[in-house]
Image 1 (cartoon, protein in one colour):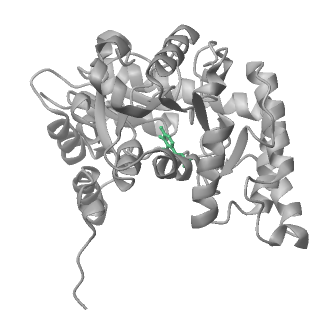
Image 2: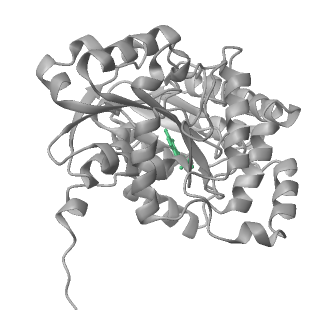
Length: 389
Ligand code: PLP
């Protein structure tokens, strides 16, 4: 049967990583020793204390049934305790926390809950592609907030034209930021909350990397700002915090009405995260200050040092990230990000992601994920040193 893709799918931007991935597979097929800094997927296993809790949970038949719509009460209670401990923010587990099947699921579905066709959504560029895709799926109109290094990769809220701000119903923020590694201060969040109040829009702050801080400055939550719960929700993820990308678990916290609307979308499309996984997720948050989590951050710090030094020696411009496990490197002068990614793959068998894949403002940069061990990272940097530009 012939079929045609929906206009919705056709409206998505082209997936620019396909080409790099094809070249990566071709290099491997040709027997090359490829070192992959491409994917943002931790190379370390899920922490043992979480697996132990899962092993017990999976044997409990009470947990085999359909999950609760908002998520398991035990998980949401642990999240509330974590939020109080980490940020000093009180959350009502029944109204202000919603379990997600990974934060991507909630980010992608949110526009269906609060954006009408034709309404404007403010989206960062460079940025995680799901903000745009979710907006397009809901029929919303993305409006790009161009981020730049000079501005610490924060959007210039004052530069958003007043007619755009008036029409906007939702603004996505993402700090700590993928791909740039930048963080936002409480001062910035306070300005964003005031902007949302003034223009009557909702902020969705994506905090998927809040626990991957690489300096002694822990990133704040936007919900620390007084009154933030009136205008904002924040997405959190267990994926990178606890090496649980495959488990699919996250949550949103904040504005109870927005969470209820998102919950209604979800209850019509999915039936929630497996309750046994939520039990394990509760154990993860209960153990969020365990030494193995700090050990993981130390591992990323060590890799970051090797990578930053090696990239600088090879002619890249690098600022060490404050958080996330990404190095966002300015490419050697006179080249664009796609050319550099191709050259690295073809001449040094190193995979990185061209910045243009995160939006036009990502041009001139490439992203390296810190998911390769220190020895292999050193080897990659040695290969880079041999390249001529
Ligand atoms: N937000 C950002 C900025 C990300 O980079 C990712 C994953 O890479 C996600 C959200 C989604 O994470 P998950 O769905 O695994 O919670």
